[in-house]
Image 1 (tube, rainbow, N blue to C red):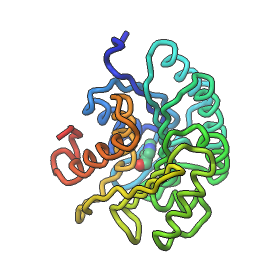
Image 2 (image 1 turned 45 degrees about the vertical axis):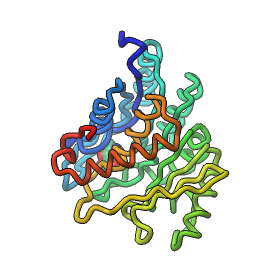
Image 3 (image 1 turned 90 degrees about the horizontal axis):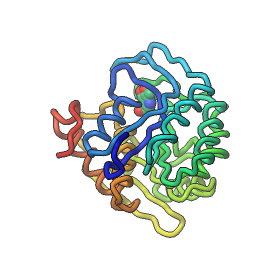
Image 4 (image 1 turned 60 degrees about the vertical axis):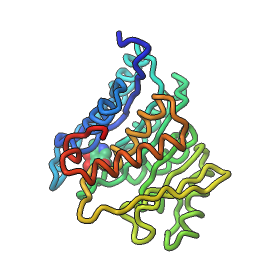
Length: 258
Ligand code: PXL
């Protein structure tokens, strides 16, 4: 048994054999933040930095069994979701989150890998919006995911704000649109909680766009929440962490808290 004084977190996501994203990246980030990470694996991908070769979804019953095994023993302070590839998996995860009354849920609505492979079937988007987003403390779409979730073409800060409002309307408590690969406003992530817009700024780091940055970011936010930070300061700290990790050649690969 892990002692209660060590914050415990859970990631529900896919396995990335190259360990740059997915479950493997999440665990490294949890370790760097000195929180104890547990996992519910939803799919196994065969991939490296160039492409995803194959992907296999795990049976829903096995996903639910992993969830039960964790919740029966651990005192989980915060949960994040990553790759959930089908409506069936999303519905099952949503059911478990309700069943175990998970409060601090961070959703990274993963859709496509950096190498262009589809990680979420088209028919899953509706289920994601109707069943999972309403349970979230925070949803962290990138620019493209924000367009899909909102159904809006984002062409200006104005439409980005509209998209944030639309995503928030699906019932989540807050939304953070990440702009690291946006065609404009790059690096200035937009937060909306129904009351305030906050722009989280960062300098862009030229030439570096490693895969897995989205996973790393949401995992760092999850860890900070488990450590007792409120949502805004968790995002601030996670953003600083990821900027340093991308900038620093060593910590880009060996995730460490600088
Ligand atoms: O970064 C998105 C992502 C999430 N989860 C898994 C992935 C990827 C991208 O490759 O493979 C398992």
